[in-house]
Image (tube, rainbow, N blue to C red; front, side, top):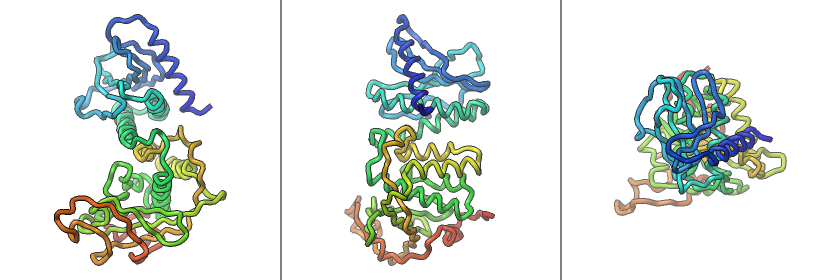
Amino acid sequence: MTMVRSNQEQLASAWRALAGMEGGQGWRVIDVARGKNGVMQAGRCFPGREESLVIGTRGLRVGSDANLPRGQGFSVAYIDPVDSAGDWTWFALSRTSAGQPALFAMMAADLLALFSQVGGYDGERIRVAMLGRIRAWQDFMKRECFGVLGPEAELGLFGELVVLRDIIGSRVPAADAVSYWVGPEDGLQDYLIGTGALEVKSTVSPVGFVAEIGSLDQLDDSLRQPLYVAAVRLSLSPDGQTLPEICAELDALLLEETGSPLALKDKLISAGYVDSMAEKYSRRFVLQHIGYRLVRPDSPRLVRGNVPAAVQRARYALDLEVIPEVASEFGAIVESLGDGTTWN
């Protein structure tokens, strides 16, 4: 039994018990995890009785409800203290009427697993970690992928992770590399590094490399310079690696170097991947080649500067092979990106 499944069953049992309690108004809660500076409870707020996670952390409240994340299937709000201690901050994550019970249960179980990792932190760090993960789920629910990425999105995410591995392999600190990855958070390009940017495109086609360009700004090097396209060519093979396997490999790298893969987990959820759906991804990819291609002023592409002013939006297909390759590994271009950091 996986930890996520066990957590889901623990929470479902607590919510069932709470549903059978007498009515009235206010919160009914059952502890599901507790630490020195934090506590997590399964809860229902009567009379509505919606399933909730109630999270308390030691320390005074920071910010207002307006700064809390909200998704299509859940709400987050600060609540009056459930505990008698006055130096604790409490907030509740609650399923809304539009929320899918199964998806909310998956989210709640992931947060319970996260608490088991961060429960020993101070109260503020616990709160930041929890709200960061909830924001990742907010991004996840915007994607409306119902828990599993489609084939094209799976391929695209695998390619972005191949590039992340290449960046870390070029001796960039893993935590820095993850922070550069902004694609899951609706970044214009997939990686923002120093003054430059890196957009990742992936294919399993053995010949040619036609990539979908999502906007007039995506390959506009007047916005960030230098701008590279990482063309990741993969093949399908029984000897390859699945999406969950490359996620696990990168988890291990982050754990070894930083002691925690939490930032990567947040990014993966924002990108539409959750560990509890790992068994749904069976395709195995083998990396054939990464080609880093520099976008220059004369590179063929559509940008706002070369289309009529009346053209407001555009998506188009571009043959990347017309843009010359300048490197086959990230280490060869890192200095040009102007990060200003010296990596050993």
